Image 1 (cartoon, helix red, strand yellow):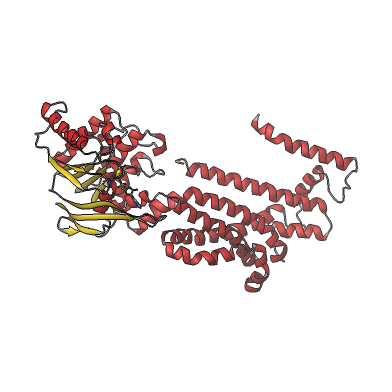
Image 2 (cartoon, helix red, strand yellow):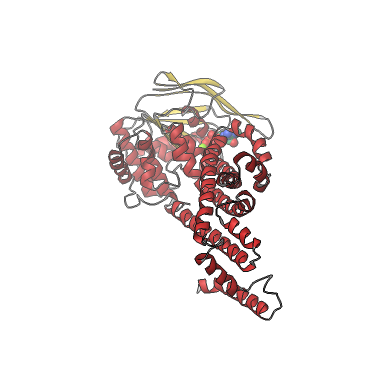
Length: 252
Length: 259
Ligand SMILES: Nc1ncnc2c1ncn2[C@@H]1O[C@H](COP(=O)(O)OP(=O)(O)OP(=O)(O)O)[C@@H](O)[C@H]1O
Ligand SMILES: [Mg+2]
């Protein structure tokens, strides 16, 4: 029942859209109908775009870049966040630098990143890393700062040294906030990816690349099919992280 | 042996920049194995005193010695039961009790077994796998007690540990604590608002004044154990303390009402 209720707006929206295309209120070559988009997805699956490069290979390629960038962002952002909140002096010192780099949109890094890493995987992963890094860093800092000082004191009295403090108090205590950071980070990473692939990946595969190829041959249906796939995967990723969150944060 | 030598402490209010004296010339000694209760009005500085003994707060002047060593940084061979419970919310009851042993690198099987013993001791059997948010305030107090006792500290600092417990659990835990204390001969510094509790537990009761807290009086409770809560002798001492409190207009109302 709940699922049906949630699907209803989607169905109504699609039906209206189909109707408008069928009655030629909207020209098909500008905005293809939902049915044609679904057929487009099928074509991407089977034939691929460019032919031979199927949807799944594009998805795999894009995922690879997102995972690489995200992993890098976690590996860098999480410890740095913990250090910056544990050693407040370090945090205060780095704060202006972080706040100056943060407002630069990840895509503004594309030119310099191409200069540094060339066109390809490394450049795209770097852009994704930048998108995911700041939410993870800032949420880790907030998470650690939200831990009651009593917990830290109690652990010290029980004999906790720095390592124990980091791994058994600060990290788990900040986990709710860290996961929020990762969720935001992944969202930004996924958004950034496609755009990074528009410009940052000339050859090879990837969803962004696939969409650009479809544009080159004026296939609006395939462009929208690609967009739909991106939206759907983004939704699935968020769902998965929420599931992990529920499992990991039963104590909250 | 714990020696508190001429301790004074002020706090500077960050907003007003005014200095407020909390403790003034506190002197007392707790022999090894002694059970000392500290009573005093709300806000007089009892928690601050315990925190200084634990090395979590620095005094302005004076010294604290634990077994002839001056306390200058956080002490790790003490048990500290904080006024607000410090169960880690992301750990279950059992894993909280285990925490100190885990930090001390006790092998998993041994620490599990020992933690279970203490869970049983504080009557939380059956709740091992509950998270702190799933148990009541009183149960949290019990778990916090187990969490500190499990590492077998030489000295126990307890900040109103049995507040918010029903009569029965309170009595049971008091007796459990006395049992452990009798067996292990720990030194206990026990802060409470409850004179009846202090009289039942203590070898010595330290009465503090309002802020800035000075020691008004140190009362010896030379009564054999196990004590009978309702015995006339205990009542007499209790009355003496209460009368003494009443004659000091300084003492805050809430404290008197609680007894
Ligand atoms: N970190 C701090 N900074 C400034 N003032 C503080 C600080 N900690 C405690 N105080 C002040 O010191 C006084 C004593 O506090 P403390 O917590 O020691 O009282 P207490 O005797 O334990 O009271 P209660 O019985 O209510 O627990 C209070 O007036 C409090 O406002
Ligand atoms: Mg207090």
